Length: 176
View (cartoon, rainbow, N blue to C red):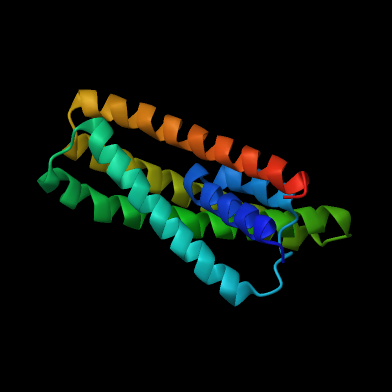
């Protein structure tokens, strides 16, 4: 596989992790998921890249919110834990969306469709619970001003990742 393709896949996976399950659905559908030939190697690369992006995000967040070490040491592990759970929920959501898409293409029994839809609802409920935990964590440890800055920071960081991905997509299509 070409290095540009690997970089593109890694960036897309990173964005999927950070942009959340809803964005993950559309990104996975656009990229034609499952094109990797050596998943073990790519999985390691994704994990390494995800870890680096998380570290960069936390470092920038600390600076942007002007957090002290004590607050950062308390928040960082918990935010990472919530992000990992969101990632797992996003993966499950992608699987369920694939199942749903296949079900609509083929004659599927109502029981199977009903089960998939029920599981999607449970998935959404689990995500909402995590989002409430996330908000509670921020309310507990951040001032109102820091909470507002956190929202702005998250949006800016996601936009920056989106821009990087779009540039990489363009470079990959250009034969890089």
